[in-house]
Image 1 (tube, rainbow, N blue to C red):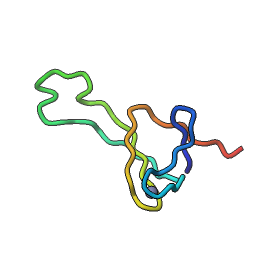
Image 2 (image 1 turned 45 degrees about the vertical axis):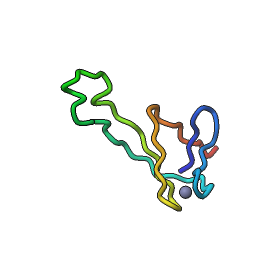
Image 3 (image 1 turned 90 degrees about the horizontal axis):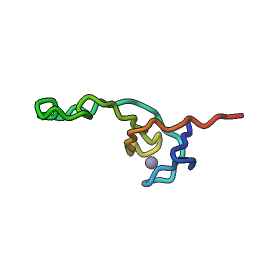
Image 4 (image 1 turned 30 degrees about the horizontal axis):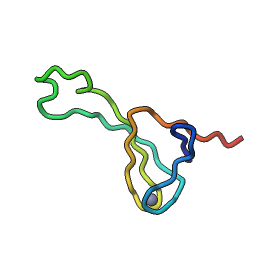
Length: 68
Ligand SMILES: [Zn+2]
């Protein structure tokens, strides 16, 4: 799947591939809950390059490219 962020089609910074697998990761970090930080339980979107497996992290979910 191809994705857009900030109006630009995403390409892998390592291999220039433009297809990614999307996944989500929780941003829990040790001590954050204790500190009462707001972002402690936020979820980031990750895109994993299908060629070289480089991971890009996003706080806002990138848009999927429509095929039409
Ligand atoms: Zn790559």
